[in-house]
Amino acid sequence: MATDLAQFIGVDLGGTAIKLGRFDQQGHLLAETELATPQPSVPGAVTVALCEAIETVDPNHHAAFVGVGLPGPMDAEGRVARVCINLPGWLEVPLADWLEPRLNRHVTLANDGNCALVGEAWQGAAQDFQNVVLLTLGTGVGGGVMLGGQLFVGHNGAAAEPGLIGVDSEGPSCNSGNQGSLEQYASIGALQRLWAGDPEELSERAASGDREALEIWETYGRKLGVGISSLVYVFTPQLVLVGGGLAGGAVHFLPAVRQEVEKRVQAVSREGLQIRSCALGNGAGRLGAARLALQRLLSVGNAP
Image (tube, rainbow, N blue to C red; front, top):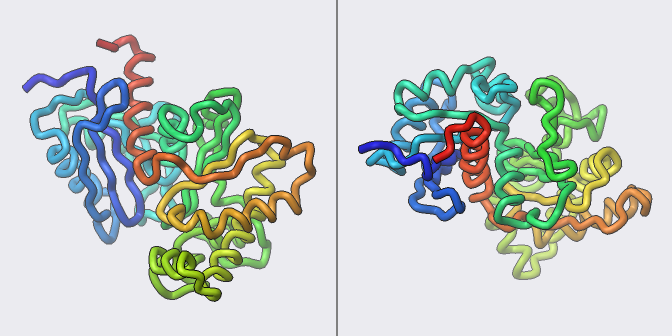
């Protein structure tokens, strides 16, 4: 069956799960699927899994374009995954070139944090804001920055890796080569150093008033707040959003984040600042990846 230029597939590739959705141009979800990321998540195994999952979500080839969000910087053309520090073997991987002949669809790549921010700006919590910082809290800590209503990607598309900023020069080592990066205090692995169980269980305990659980989330929020304070000074956003797998506990840790930011950041740099959870949950990344595929299609003049 012929492809339909009015439909797009968005993929959110994470360290533990791959989430996919097929959307129309208005962002309506037409089909979806989710699968565990192959372990080890080497490029070849992930490529095979992506091909199978895309065929599952679009067996009749309605969609002509696929956007894939990955945890790391891409090249400026959206063809090559430059490095994904929490996925083994992901260094200069030409994923778009690998996928296109297998899928018979156009493929574009983007940073997963950028995808989440695009999704939230399109249909979520960032719709009415021009200057936004978003952090995704999961296996790693990613994110995106929007300034003046436009994604900030910096030189060669490698900007906006908030999880890799330094918060403690003597802290734990990071896969990036840094030491004491925000990721070491705000990822799932960081939370597990405070709590050996499942984050969802920790949220449930906190919701029931468990003092230990509440204190753990507060400690987590203070560390996250240190990193966010630095980001606020650099970008002076109107809005800071948190998403990803750990955002389910946001009601418990965001009060500590806000307190830390208020303590550390001068009032003039945080005037009118809001800090809150993403509205689209874990669906923001795949929606944003589809939106970026749509935007790049329009930019080359192939729109239906």
